[in-house]
Amino acid sequence: MNRKMVIGYTSGVYDLFHIGHLNLLKNAKGMCDKLIVGVTVDELVTYKGKHSVIPYEDRAEIVRNIKWVDAVVPQYDMDKVEMCKKLKADVLFVGDDWYGSDKWKKYEEDLSKFGTEIIYFPYTKGISSTKITKALKAVRGE
Image (cartoon, rainbow, N blue to C red; front, side, top):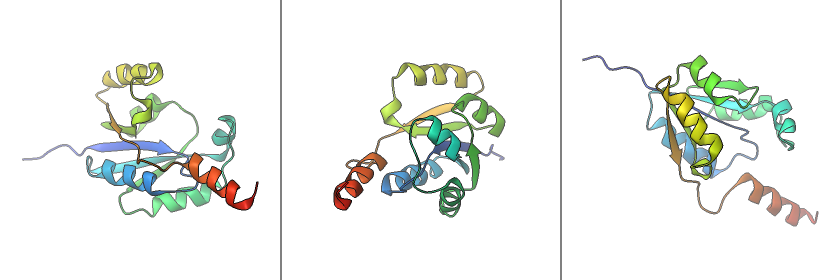
């Protein structure tokens, strides 16, 4: 019996790559046949009011070489619906800090029209890029 290949998608900046990122990618791959990861381009990181420490090409190369990742694509904007449609993603994986927000309720509604499901993963306790950045600043005396 032939079964449809399940395509999963997730995205992020992946700056200061940490165990939480790895957990999300590993868990996502466990729920799909092909995992495609969008890595935010430097211009979009700046647009979001932040600055990446590691340039896009390096971040994409790091993510591309994680054994659970099948493909990396640049993320030029925040439009999850268009990207999922373009990639024919069956599942969109995201951290549960977005669960229940108006923005993600709308994504759920819009994506369901195309048969894409959102799966929310719990954040890895005690770790985030923000906490790493604060710790580095403290260590450096900034």
